[in-house]
Amino acid sequence: MTTVIKEESVKKKKFREAPHPFVILFTVVIIMAALTYLIPAGQYDRVEDADGRTIVVDGSYQTIDSSPAGFLDIFNAIHKGMVQAAPIIFFIFMVAGSFNLFRESKAIEGAFGSLSTKMKGKEMLIIPVVMMFFGVAGAAVGMFEEALPFIMILVPIAIVMGFDSIVGAAMVIVGVSAGFTAAFMNPFTIGVAQGIAEVPIFSGMGPRIGFWVAFMAISIGYVMIYANKIRKDPTKSIMYEEDKNRNIDIEAMQQDKITKTQGIIIGVLVLTLIGLAFGVLKFGWFITEISALFLIMAIVIGLINRLNFNEITKSFVRGCEEIVLGALVVGFAYGALVILNDSNTIDTILYGITNLVEKFPSSLTAIGMYIMQTVLNLIVTSGSGQAALTMPIMAPLSDLLGVSRQTAVLAYQMGDGITNIIAPTSGLILAALAMAKISYGKWVRWLWPLILIQFIMGAIFITVAHIFFWPA
Image (cartoon, rainbow, N blue to C red; front, side, top):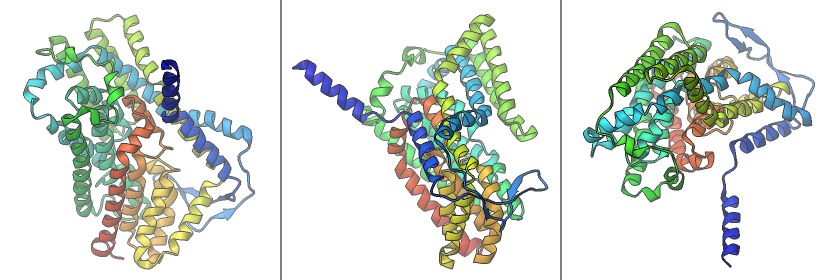
């Protein structure tokens, strides 16, 4: 009888188990492949602008011979996606390997032990402070991918402080995403979009800062309400069982004070992050230079921790092993885009959505642009890539439809950002969840009310901007 009950329990558990990220993304690839038989092939002409960006020529769309994805193309797309995503994949490996040396030094446990007495009773304050930091970074310098390493630091801290892994991951992911979405001077979204739309770069900053403040306040409040509920009753966490089984050295985190070696290692991390910020702002560093910086950090930390080069290497590899899923999932996500690009259907999708926007009543045209950008962001998850694809069309279209180009940029910005942390085609969010060891299904279950709130707020911001701030 007991055996029967156990077998039924196992079957129920398997039935309830969330789909693996690879299963989700491969399903998306298959769906995209099926769409290539329904959507005719087409192309816009493209030219290179003064800044070297390849942009779409408005009014140049034309149909071409159809080339739908075949059976083998579906599987080819995975490898092609891996190749195209290689810079990001290896960035994730480099960061994970480097941070494993930092993690195994127990420096974070030592730092937490020293701060725990000072923070006792004030643990909730860490949430707005951390989220504001990432919100400013996302809004001002376009931080997104660069925030991922912090997940591996904040998840264990959040758990030991009485929260859960969702709170630890949300402080980073929701914080940086909210800032990125409602940015006031993000060079990768606002800068590119305004440049293409031929409006002054970073103009309209006053209203944008107001939108950013409101966006951050709602996002921080959402995380804090959940965190407070978990502190009162940990069993209400949707990650309760998983977090119980995490390998976190709570005793080490409760040590009286940080050791001298741990203090030096923390100092190396701080200098690395300062160097990262300086390099991004001053020299335009991206993932190649940041990867090199973290590799240097790993070697220095290893030597400070009195490890030989073999031990440093083994620790680095252990970190890479833990993040294999998170790294490879990025390539799977790119596979979906490969299908649409190779079949020449992505431009047809853009053309069709643009025609729909033109049919909206004039009072709702700006909202139509917003919805269009949101839909396209599920396909083109790169902010600058979406700007290059859509703004050459949206800018002149806004002139015809009585919408300010500034409002068109805002519609793009909001549509591009809000779904970044929930889109199944976003390899970066799936990589982030793999770092936090949170399933995609549970993340969506926790996050969807906030996404709905943010989407409504975005519509309100665009309407207010269209009527009061930037009327055509």
